[in-house]
Image 1 (cartoon, rainbow, N blue to C red):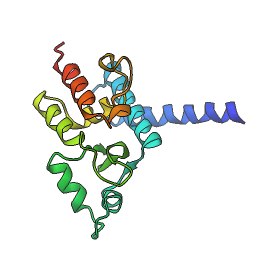
Image 2: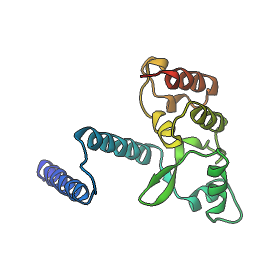
Image 3: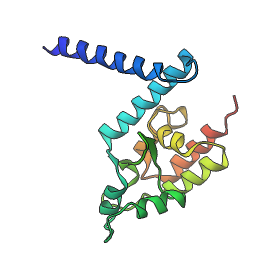
Length: 162
């Protein structure tokens, strides 16, 4: 039932997508629909490869004694933590934490640079997952242990005007 199951899952996904589009107040262009799907696909890559953490999970990961939402919320508001808004909640990509639960040093400067260049912080976090010519096709997320390289690539990529 492998191929049949895959076909049924795709059909169900298309029906769910069509239902969501039918609830939209305005006409959704094919380009906008494709962009929304591409964003969702990247979010799923983050979830599957690195994990997406809730605020409570972030507090636990970082060793907080009070495992509530305030730690992640404060770090997000201070521009020290990348986030994704999804289904009316904030989720935090796991790639921004090192093996000890500390936020990687590149994250805060990356967020500052994104804001300086007029980039949405969520989009900047998702940019890390796509190969870029500024890293010879590599994904910036694979170079987070080398902040200078990531920040230089981001600076060049985000300076482009279309």
